[in-house]
Length: 167
Image 1: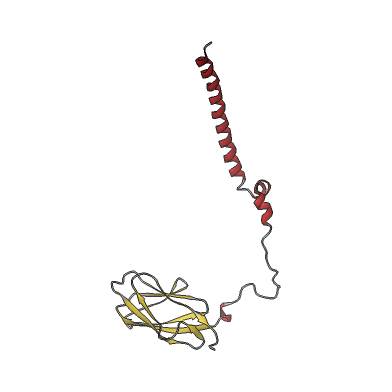
Image 2: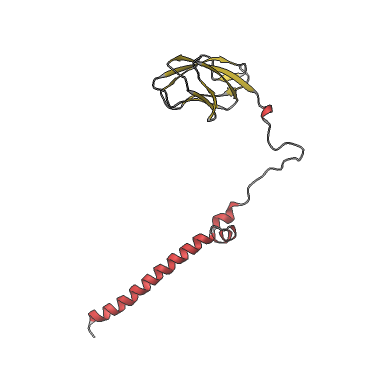
């Protein structure tokens, strides 16, 4: 028997062994990933899952409401006016939701609360529009009266609303 034939026999058996091993490992990988979707098996197989612990849920007294009602939060008003440009159809959004839409009059009154994000949004505006905060109710620190924002056709933040006592 020559060396070349002996080598081919040995390597072909070894090649079959490698292919079977790779196939078995692939099946084992797929099965283990499928098992990790179940919480019981994830607790057993994953060290991180055991170290995570339980979520903290503070105890709520039964007589207190779980959520603060919207009436507890003070609402403020501010007036926005167009200084230059055509703002018809331009929206004023509070926390991403449309609160007012500019019309031909060129001014809107918006109700806001402390912590709100106030922005101008529009898509069909072909020119630059300048908007000014003309009136602010008592108790609002930001945006200040007289603040001007220039809208270039993409969402523009006017201000984060800050309410409180002025010092």
